[in-house]
Image (cartoon, rainbow, N blue to C red):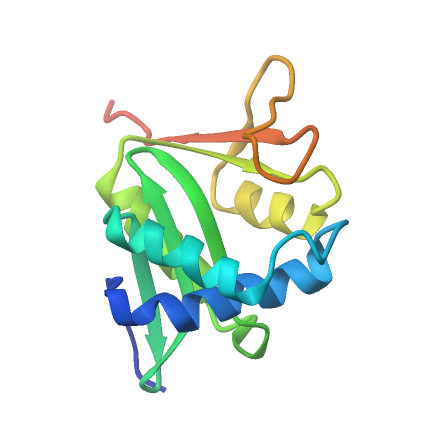
Amino acid sequence: MTVYLRPGRPTDAGRTGEILWEHAQTDMSAPDLFSCAEAIACCGQMIDNGWVTVAIADDRIEAFLARAGGEIESLYVARTANRMGLGKLLLADAMERCETLHLSVHPDNGGAQRFYRRQGFREAPGPTQSSGRCAEAEIRMCWQREQDK
């Protein structure tokens, strides 16, 4: 299997939106919160902002990460591509580009919390915050590059 990363392109909005919408249907407490077309539009906006990196596996987008500076806005892997290391590859790329990274995770998403902890993220101290998306309260997690001694 051939895997590589590249910046998102406007023509990637459809596939990244499908991946996002697929997760919304199974992972969110309100799966009808937005339509597939709205997910595609959201991904298109993130791509236009220059935030998106896509993971291509065998000539098909199978995962994407949206990062605004040090804030990870989205990291999703297509259900059919789970356990292929694409999320880890995208996150490693973001870690190479930033000194610190921050993200929010829904409290019910234990799998994501475990994944981020394995990659070196820690829960941020202080009260939980809402990013204004779907969750009423979210867990903030942070990663910081280790300083050379």
